[in-house]
Every structure is written in structure tokens, then in C-alpha cells.
Image (cartoon, rainbow, N blue to C red):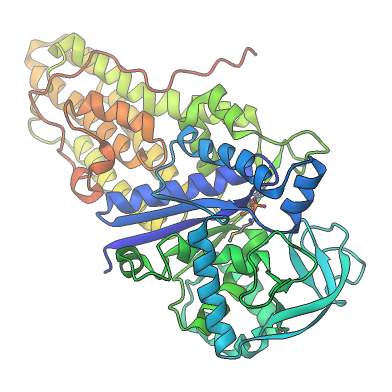
Length: 513
Ligand code: ME8
């Protein structure tokens, strides 16, 4: 098995500030990146901004700015989003960087040279917000089939990519790589789309100046999606023969929203095939959030600002909600009320409470010193068995990009641990000096379950997990440096260690209700 993992977010348009959709993809990638590091892999995690194209040019001119001024202003919000959400990305790419021009030119030239890109004339429809081309049939009512907004008629000389030539090769590739497009339902949609026939794709614009020039063709700029997709290579130093390209290409996972799957699962592999480059191993399309049951839109004024959420609830609760609330891949509804409910009932009442109350008892009965466990009652074996199963369940879930399943498995372990404490009644054991060894074992087991939970939560709630880790493993250093399979094994809590008498990681959120 390759010991590296390359994961990417889409690069975000700089025509507007970040919203929950951006936070969602980035947080999902971060959890995946962190988990793979905890599996001992070397991870490259790329995010960044998509700065060319008609949409950016239009927004800039409305604001009286040049596109570059707009990009330079807005990019700072996306750059600030990563620390705000405790994102562990290793690269950040802007498509206006010179290194990106080099990569796009190289890729484009390869397809020009082999005849896969040719000059023709484009006539059809264009959706500016989606930066997508449509045929008469696709845009039959004058609306974009993806977003429903009006399309514009276009007729201009254009370079085309011979997408039609790749139809069979793409279908063969999907057939041979059933995990390339996930989830399954989306895979079927893409296959049906490709089976329906592929037209050659316009990959340049003459009526636009804000883009990467077509090599040796003054007046033409490269289509923003051709430019944008190439970022995944630029981020590793392509076309240079860098150590990163060697170690990390092809990408393991391009995480995208469902609306931009076609670009990643059809166009991108075709561009790569044409250039003779290895194809990514997977594209996962996640669903969309509505907000309090309504479509999120500026006109409705219900756009969720991730900075706001972090300010109000902290990054851990926000991240937790995003990945816990919906089956990853399906659509979901965002509501602050539900966020607070989940954070209080699962993070504060279950996980936080397990840790804090057990530390409290350890302080009271053992002055904070971890006792050595003695013997194993059936109830102890059930709990340690459950921890082992949880580790395996999280591993499986992450392999399936099913964050909700990973988190519900951890919460299940915590629930079992709380029930164990309730059933063992350490406060009653403490009254009987003959039961001191048993009391020690019970507290050990409860704390050990909290330790395993803290470890397994680290990809999702990194700051809180670190606090829990510091409390349970004094001097243990960064939890993210741990190997899940080793540190997750039952019995890692060190007897004799001196632990704090309290640790509140998830304070209950007051609703005022
Ligand atoms: O599409 N819920 O950038 P972008 C969930 N530049 N996700 C949402 C969402 C919602 N309500 N609204 C948007 C682009 N998204 C291109 C990508 S990649 C080579 C180029 C998601 O800033 C959307 O699905 O418009 C997409 O994955 C992401 O936000 C970025 O959108």
C-alpha cells in the first residue's frame, strides 16, 4: 500500500466571501487528511482559490476594481478560513500565481501537440455563474440545467478539446475503477451522462481578457475550468519533476460538491488522458446544505458565515455538526438550533461529561494518580471490546468517506462508557475499603475509553481532542502525531500518571431558551 495520500478541496471562486459550502468541503478534507496522517501516511492536502474567468471579471467591474484587486482582497478571507476552522492544509494555491500559468501552459500544449485541442468556432449557451457551456438541447428553456439561472448566447472562435474522442475510454475507466466516482448514485449519473454522448468542449474564450492566455494565440484566454482543474497538478510543482509530484500524483481524492462533479469526473480525467498523465484515484461528491429548510442565497439573506459560527460555537462544535449531522454524500439542513442540540447532547453531555466526571472521581479517590487495572470483569471486557470495534468501525467508515458513521461509532463508545460508569457505581465502591482495587479498575477503564474516544475524535475536533489528550496523557505531545492503530489499542493509559482533577472541553452552550 502506498504510504502517501493526496487530497484536494475545490479551489474557491474569489467573487464572494466564504460560506458554509466552502467550510464544509474544507472541513471534510481536513478530517480525511488528519485521519490518513494518523494511519501513518504522508499527506499532501491542497486548497486554494480560483481567480480567473468571466464571473470574477464581472464582479470586479461592478465593484469598480480590477479582477486582480478583487482577487487580492477576497483571497485573504479564504486564507483566514483555514486557521479559523483549524485546517491542516499543506498547500494553498492561487490560480493567478506564475507557477500555475506554467502548469496550465504545459498541459494545454501537450494536447495541442497531439491534436486533441484544435481551433474551431463555438456557438451555444453559457452560464456565467457556473462558468459552464451548454448545448441547445441542454439549455432548452434558456436556463442553466445545473443552477436554473439564465444562460447567454455565445458565438466566437474558440479552441476545442476533443472530448468526444474520450467517451469510450472514460466509460472503460469508470468500469474498471468502481471507486473512482463516489457515492454510487452519483457514479451512475455520470456514467449516464457520458453514455449520452460527449461533445467536444470549448476550452478558450476570445471575448474575455481575465484568464491565462492560450499559448501562441493572442486574444484567446483559456477556459476557466481547464485552468482551475489544473491546480491539482500545480500544487505539487508540475510540470517540474518535483519530489511532491513523484510522491503524491495521482491524487487519492478530489473532494467536490455535487454541482461540480461533472468537471472532475468527466473533463479532468479526459484532459489527463490526453496529456498522458495518471488519473486520480477518486472523486467524492458531497451534498448541499439548505439553511433552516430553505435554499441558501444572498437574496434571502440566509448565507451562513463560517467565521460567525466559529466565533459563536468554536471550531470543534461547528466541524462536528457539519460532519455528524448528515450522511456524507446526501443533502442536509443547517440550523443553529440543531447544532447547539448536537453539541450539547453529544459533545458536552456524553464525551465531555465522561472525561470530566471520571477525572473528578480519580481526583477524589486517588488524588489524580492513574491506578493499575486489576483483573477483568465481563463488563470490563465488553467495554474494551467495544473500543476495539470502534477503532475498526472508524477505519472502515473513513475508507468509505462516511464521516457520520465514524462519529456515531465514537459516540456509541462514549455512551457505553457512561453506562459502564453508571452500572459500576464507583461512588458506591469507594465506600468499601475492600473494593479499592475494583474502584481503581473501573476508573481506569472509564478513562481509557475516554482516551480512545479523544484519539478517534482528533480528525474531527482537533482542538478539543488535544485538550483531552493533554489531560489523559500528560506530556504526550500532539495527538495528531499518534498512530491510530497503536495508540488506539486498549490499555494505553499509563498507571501512575498524574491527571488533572477536572477538564472541561465542551462547555454546554447556553441557548437562552
Ligand atoms: O465551484 N452546500 O467554486 P465555488 C454545500 N471554483 N456545498 C456548497 C453549497 C451549499 N449550499 N454551495 C456551494 C467552484 N457549495 C469552482 C471550483 S475546482 C477545480 C473549481 C460548494 O466557490 C460547491 O459544491 O463556487 C463547491 O464544491 C464549493 O462550494 C465551491 O464553490
